[in-house]
Length: 107
Image (cartoon, rainbow, N blue to C red; front, side, top):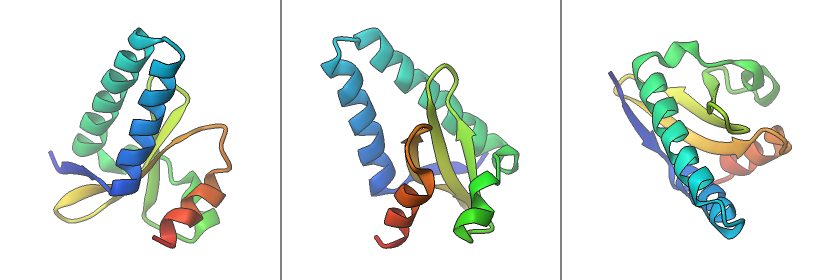
């Protein structure tokens, strides 16, 4: 299993999602989100090639993949490296994914 290492922006994305759920007085949802994220990280650490390359072509990032969180409308965007899985973003599915990912490229 490869280590799954989120970038700073991915950590901020997760913090924003948890804050949203907590602000909505949905502590159980926040805890569920964390559990789903941990499951997603575990999966992509074991099977990084199973993620969808859907946005890879649109963003001209051939190795970019995404994996959905179970029961939550979020996608984990990552790239498999020889020694780890590099998590770029954790974004809500309803966002303009290409625009948000281009923001990442400029960081």
